[in-house]
Image (cartoon, rainbow, N blue to C red; front, side):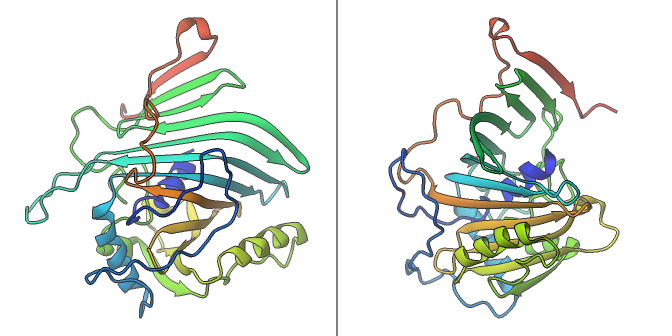
Amino acid sequence: MGLLLAILVCLVTSSLRAIEQPPDDALTTEIRVEPRETKPDQPVGNFANAGELLAALERADRDIRAFSSQIRYTRLFEIENDIQTRIGRLYFRTDPPSDAASEKPTPRRRWVAVRFDQFIAGQRSDRQEKLWVFDGQWLVEKDPVEKQFIKRRMVRPGQVFDPLRVGEGPFFVPVGQRREDMELYFTAALRPASEGLEDVYDPQRDQVLKTLAAKLDGLIQLELTPRPNMKQVEDFALIRIWYDPGTLLPRASFAVDQLGNVDVFELFAIDVNEGKAPLPEGVFSVDPPLPGEGYHVEIVDETQP
């Protein structure tokens, strides 16, 4: 669960501006490279190395206030040799940045909500809702099918720090971080867009990855390899993230865990800073269901020893 949220947040913490969004009832299934919007002080396009890209993403993070998109999450299981896909929407909001001149900037609170409503396994597709919400303090997982509601406190009340910063909070966010932190925990490298998207041992997985590679042509790939003995990023074996070179918007990610399972996230119909529509009211609510709704409710304080 923490890994899922970490990868989702990583896709939205370095976005610059809104791009064209189709009507809400239209499911976009293609990743389109957007034309560059000229801005004199904005570094985009060709980067000499991963350090330059990380520096550009760090600067870009200051412009984001809100983010929403359609999302497709595909999980490739190593041992079970199974492939599952969920389709839904992602929402993100953050406090404005503190004064850059301050010696100790105030940490930014961040909210994330992911609502899946379609589940695909093999040839079967079902309407199946599942919801995750993180409000900067509480993490909620809600399953309307199983009538389960689990709420976990991840950050102590009044505690002042960014709960999403690598090495500091309960979740790791691989981008939107300070360049120096990223280079402490990872070896970062720029790679060709399609590199690493193949599986010579499993034809079914290989086809999924090759289909993804075809969508990512023309994007920038950032490869992140965790450095040895870094507990903060020990869940990951490898992370790949793709960015639109004209906007620096994140478009997809690929993460391998220590068991060999692969998580692939694709973003479509992106809207930054509510350029096309406001975020839905109550989308970040962590309130439990009412007693009459029939949910099993569990509330846990993970901050206690």
